[in-house]
Image 1 (cartoon, rainbow, N blue to C red):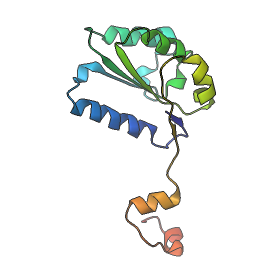
Image 2: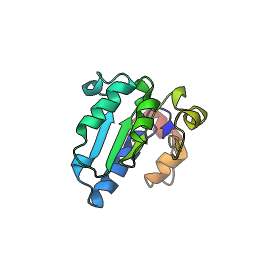
Image 3: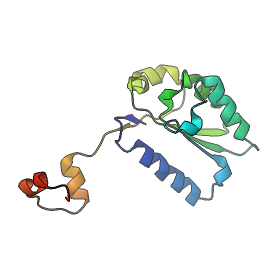
Image 4: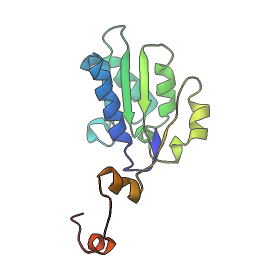
Length: 146
């Protein structure tokens, strides 16, 4: 998934994780790395990413790998392609910058993948999803309690 910052990519990843858990996948087979967190600041290149993930693998079952804001890792494509050599990994990635464009990924991540462009909600979509039928724009602009 790629898209603007704050457009909901991380929320969608969390929803996918919850769905995977709901069908019985064990937490030990879900690897989630958010590269916005300092906890993963030492994973700066493809080799470090590949090693980190491989060290978490304890059996031959499928592992679900979620890499949030993966563009922060140099040559992340190499690590992903290395993991994809086997059928042991199902990989989900998000990113926010030009490095994550469809055309670049189509050559760097050859093979099976699906790309989703995530856009933030429009103003109309946001207020209609909250059940608001009418808005007084003056009231909205004059206070932030809307």
